[in-house]
Image 1 (cartoon, helix red, strand yellow):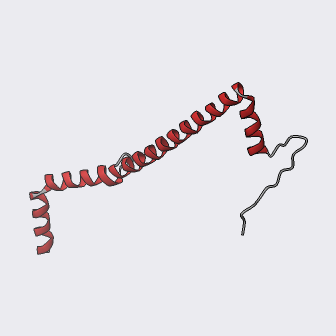
Image 2 (spheres, rainbow, N blue to C red; image 1 turned 90 degrees about the vertical axis):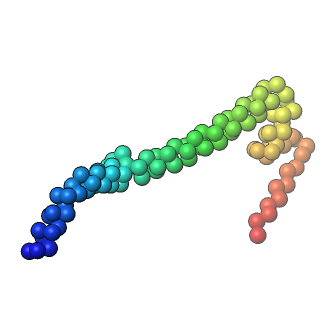
Image 3 (cartoon, helix red, strand yellow; image 1 turned 180 degrees about the horizontal axis):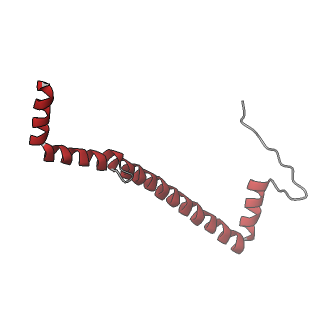
Length: 100
């Protein structure tokens, strides 16, 4: 019984400090908008921004290729040969594979 009364006296003495610490723990760790959740959201946002940059680079590259196809018939022939293995009537295509 002596320990319980000593404990309660200590709690009454530091009640504001205990409430502040519990409040910070709740806000920092348990709340839906805690510091940990905010950190995870910032990480996700950075990954999405990196993906957006990658897609913007791919878009710019594809637009250059599309512009080259529209303006130069040799570029269209080159892309058709490289990507789709198209050939002219008097040509043969050999595809070499480096599979082991």
